[in-house]
Length: 221
Image 1: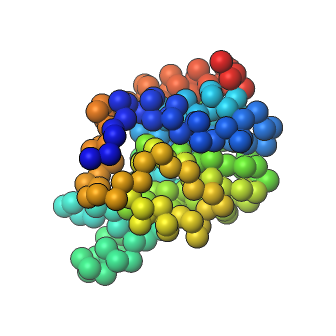
Image 2: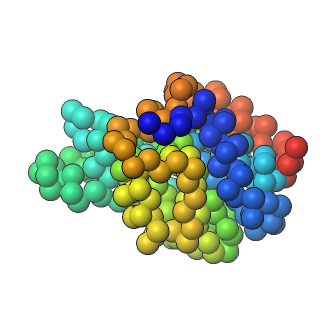
């Protein structure tokens, strides 16, 4: 079996080493997909000295099997549907719409909880590094990329510690750059398998990391 990360912070530090060509550039933003992507992205933003923010995306879980994504939604009114899953399970449109409405409410709650009064950063003409703690099917990241495109980002970089090669290949056609530390050829079995500590990131941890980053937005120490 390939190596495993100690935790998300270590994964972020290793990923940051592969993103040093963006260090200190004034037009670069690191955007974390909460919640698990935030500890990873915090380490990257600190290492390369650029601002950090969250990018709100919610997976649309299939009824009765919430971990299986039938799509995702993102800020900016973006909805991505996994046609393979929807067709295989014959999920009707009204079910997708109902789940999307529920997740939209949760996305709005997180927006309020994480940002306080801080407005989201403007992505127009910026280099945007989208970070998560790993990709399996990639549904949420697909929605994030589509939303960043809609927001007129100049360049979109997908950066994750671990993902199967097949999923990474999909993003080579969507993003301008794909950066990954581990792309195991063996059975993937989910992102958590590749971490020794994959405990859930809490809302409080997300707020704390965002507050720390906003106090030192370009610190590279």
